[in-house]
Length: 129
View: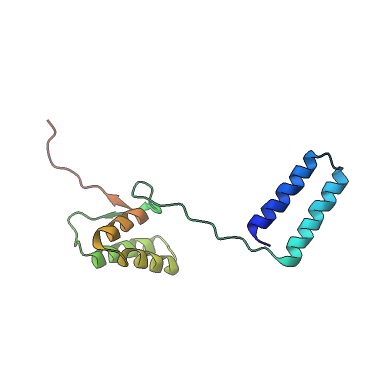
């Protein structure tokens, strides 16, 4: 049974409660649905990940500094992967990160990095007037 199908069934049962069916009939209908889910199994659709942005990265607790460092995309990916690994991120997710960053042009790859981890802002030494 698919998630959407199950949702429709439950919604239909809930709507039927509004039609003043007896509590015993409602309980029997819910038991029948539970038995059907148990017999057929339940195939849930995969949950969609929210879109991550530089303002709301996937791992905001992990920070990386880009300024003053080697700017090659492979160097950046290596530093970020090391930080992710140090925070216990699973190897499959590390591979997903690598693919997401290196499959793009340089600018898009950098943007992807900022959607995964927090990027430290450089400290300005300029005196404000």
